[in-house]
Image (cartoon, rainbow over all chains, first blue to last red; front, side, top):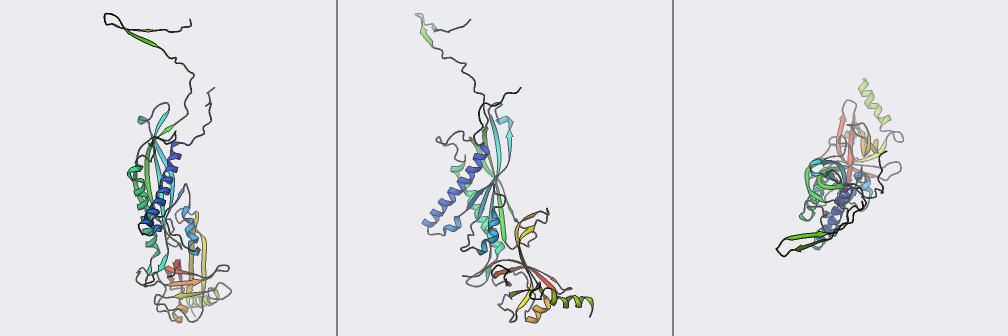
Length: 237
Length: 131
C-alpha cells in the first residue's frame, strides 16, 4: 500500500502567490501613480487602473457604462495564469521544481464616441484603443521596473514559503478586439501583456525522525606536533 | 405595381406602423438636420451577441435601427445615414427609447442599405454629448 502524506496541504502554490503578487503590485502602484499625478498637477484619472484576477469577462461592465454618471473610463486589467513549464534540469528530484509560469495581463480600454465642445467628435474606437494602450504602458512600466525584477520576493522579511524568483520578463504584447463582426454598440479594445516569471515550487517533504546525534571531538596536539582527535561514541551492540 | 415596388410599399405596414413594429426615432445628420415629422422604424438594443467564430453566446450589446429609405429621402435628408470617420465634424446620430428605458442617443457606426428592398439597417454605438 502506498503511504500517504501525513500533513494537510494548506498552502498556496508558487503560481497562485505569483498571480496575486502581480495584481497587488499593479494595484498598489496605480494608486501611488495617481497620488504622484495629483501632486504634479495632472489628472490622476489617466493613471487609474481597475485590477482584477482570473475574471472571464471583466470588461462586461462597459456594456452599461453609458447610463452611469459619472462615467469611469479607466482601463480594466485582468491578471490570469495561463500555463507553466517545469525545467527538470533546474529542478531538484525531491523537493523543488523550477516553474516557468506564463501570466496574461489583459488590459481593456473602453471608448465612447464623444461630441467635442469646440466642434467635431472623438471616435469611440480610437479612444478605446488609445485607452488600452495607455493602460498597457502603465502595466509594462510597473512590472518591468527595477524594483520588481524579482517580483519583490527576495526581501528578507517576506513570509515563507514565498517562491524564490529567478527572473521575470514580458515576452509579448498583443492587441485584440473582444467584439464580433463590428456590430457591437460598445467600443472595447484589449491589449494582452504576457509576463513570464521563473520561480521555485515546493512540495511536502518527508519529515524523518532524528537520526543524527551531536558528536563532540577534542582536537589536541602532541608534544611532537601531531594533531590528534578524540571522541566518545555511545554504541548499542 | 411590380413585386419589388409592392414590397417597398408594404414597409409602411411593417416597420413603420406605430404600435406594430414601428417605433419612433429621431435621426440627425452631421449638419444638424432632423426631420420635422416623426419618423418610425424598427429599433433594437439587445444585450447578447453571438460570437461569429464559435457560435457561442457571449456577452455584448448590439443596437440597430432599420428605416425606410424613401421616407428618409422624402423627409429632406440629403443622403443615407453612414459611418463618419472624420472627427472634425459630427456623425449621424439616432435617438430612440425602449418600452421600459428612457431615450438614448447613438452614433451610426455602420449602415447596410438594401436598395432593392428599400430599407437601410444601421448599426449603432454609444454616444456621449458634450457637457
